[in-house]
Image (cartoon, rainbow, N blue to C red):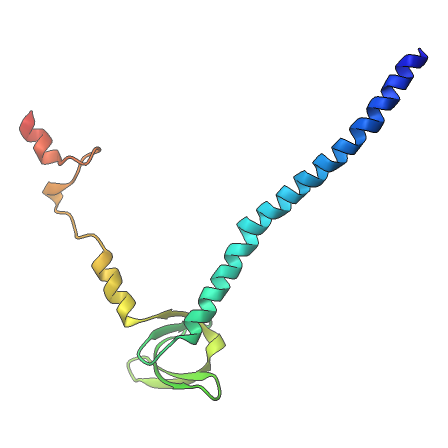
Length: 140
């Protein structure tokens, strides 16, 4: 009976150290996973947004954090502000750069239009494996 108690005590003392290390490693993996899944992409997006605000130039179309859409007509570096023109009556507003939510340059619009796939005609739709349905019907 005494030998059983001695074996249990030895198993508890030796196994206890390993369980603490495993638990610490598991928590470290969870914290690292949360960092790479949650915090790192958010910081990358913040850097990208700050860079686009900094590189906004005359002629770019912007949207402010308040939802105002306009085109930049002047940039004042000394006060870190911009002047935008909005609406059909071309009303001008002066805004701080930090109020810019998104910047769309005219070059980006041209590139987006060029990268969009051309419209597919209704009789030239492709089937499941990329073959044209019209060719399939002709083979039958």
